[in-house]
Amino acid sequence: MTATPIERLALADQHPSHQDLVDRVDAAGVTPGNLDAIIVPTSRRPGGLANAIEAAGRTEATLIVLCSKDASVAETMVAAKESGVRAYGVDLGLLDNDNLVPRFETEALLTNRGFTRGTDTSLKRNLGLMIANLAGWERVLFLDDDISFPDPTHLSAAAGLLGEYAAVGLTNSGMPDNSVVCHALRSSGRRQDTFVGGGALAVERRAFGSFFPDIYNEDWFFLLDDQRLLRTAVTGKAQQEPYDPYHNPQRAESEELGDTLAEGLYGLLDDRKGPVDATLGYWATFLESRRQLIRELLAETPDRGDTRHMHESLRAALRQSELIKPKFCVDYLESWRRDRSAWKDYLELLSIPDGEENSMEKVFRDLSLSDAVQGPR
Picture 1 (cartoon, rainbow, N blue to C red):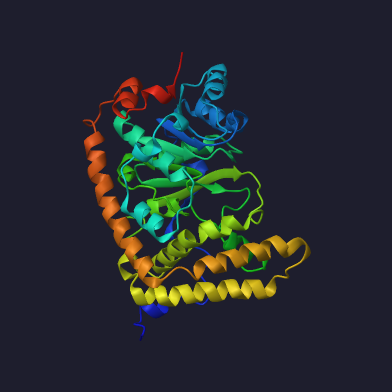
Picture 2: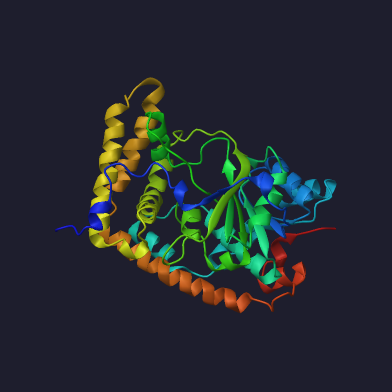
């Protein structure tokens, strides 16, 4: 197969940064804005939600906590009430998760090809979008339960930029939020940046038409339309708790497909191209470049002592990469485009007239969530 010029744009080293795609804005110069809600997907014990409760209190935003696994709705509601925060908790364990949000083609494709991740973060974030849309909210913040804010006023700055921007991320000043492979790149001494992520992401209503696919880097896909990146800025600071990216090689395995697709797409955006340019030949070239990169990292990483877990994780990533075919990448993006269209149509059914708001009780009732919700008392 002879590669065309666009297909040859896949680089031997994946792009170390995509920061040129977004605007950087000094929080000190921004007129503060208000948030309607803070939406937190969580599976941890309620003690891990102290930062989210504090953020909701400072911004006077409604707190929506979407709980599974070890998260307790009841304990979270007690903590929110003690802090004077208006909060609602949804226990996903009491619901049929298969019917909470529309069925996506991309999800079925991953299941059929053996690439299912087994996480519920995307499900929770999409449910958050549905709640926000039906409630008539204009500005919401997606917040992970391992994020804190050195300066809480930066939340108001992010909200203040919405309108000019469809999405605003808080700059991560803590543990870098990267894939395992990108952590290994940084550990090897190569330059490796971070990008806007869903861990601390303010979005306005016009961005609700995007959805979070059930794949690693779902937030990168959320920030894309069919042709380009939504107008996005970064401002202020957020801090992610430390974690060990190499603790379990399965992490690298579960990330590899989403990291490959996202890095490939954003590399095209860096080169002033778009998703339409992600052809079969492009993916053939990019996949080989990605695998060569991982092989180089493996060659530089001894399989012993304090680097053994990194080595094991990189081997897992390479094994998974070798299962990814160029045709699958093309098929996935075609399904993703159809899912985007179907999601927009679905949200239209949930919309209310501009300027109106539904009561939260009606929102949860219309979404068949009432039996799993606890709220202010």
